[in-house]
Length: 230
Image (cartoon, rainbow, N blue to C red; front, side, top):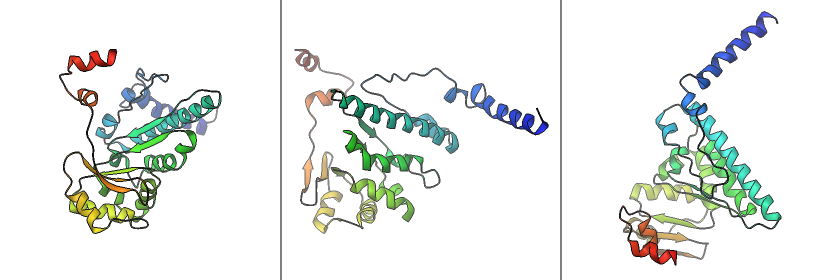
């Protein structure tokens, strides 16, 4: 083995040690809790974002997104053989994933928004900070396409500055008239502006059912669970 090859191998070994027993071991070399056959899989990115290491976070996201893409493909193949699987991808706090310097998540969102319906699935991004989707023209090109590719959109109460960001994102297509903007800005808890198509646009009131309320309550009424057991 020549000296150059030996040097390269030692460099690789030093880098790998960081992931085996170094500072990244808790992320890359720890037991996995992932159950691929589960009906609901939750990926918690909070610790990755808290780490403030964009390189590691995006490397992990790349692996997770590739796994999700493969699950969508697998579901389609199983459906061809008689199953009736529907894959739903839900991303909460989607603005945290938007980064012009590291577009891995944005590219995944953009791809899913265009393709997932062909695979019999759904993609639901939710965000409280539309300004991050409107940070610059490069981002806006894809974030605007993600929103416009949506079959249904719910816009809850926004401040006036946030409303302006929404108008910027929508400016290349259907926008909002003055009455619609007032509906959104003056909305109360539970109210949203619903967009189902160019013609189907209206203010709606969302009322959660009794069982749905118990899912977010510390004290769950026994009669609700008894009712659902029967």
